[in-house]
Length: 117
Image (cartoon, rainbow, N blue to C red; front, side, top):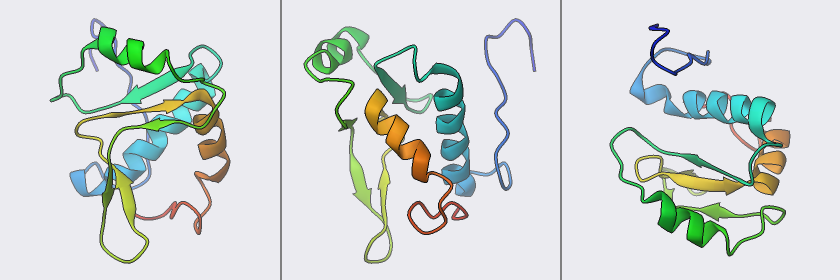
């Protein structure tokens, strides 16, 4: 790591591979919950190849309550009857309340398929 770059390395289960994205995302949300859940109303996750106009996102999120459960983004259908995932490519926002609730099930192997790739 380069101390001049304001970045951190968050450990995650499994290999450092694109096919292990779910474990990386779980680790990111755990870190955000542990360190920032009380500092912000909404949290945004997206790849390094997207374009966000912060003013527009802020304007839209300001119409929503962080104390309600809000997922702002695109959900995709995966393989199998009950397999859905959030599109990380375009990014998505979670309200504080949904992050608090998500954290309570994030490690549950049935509800959240914690060991899935």
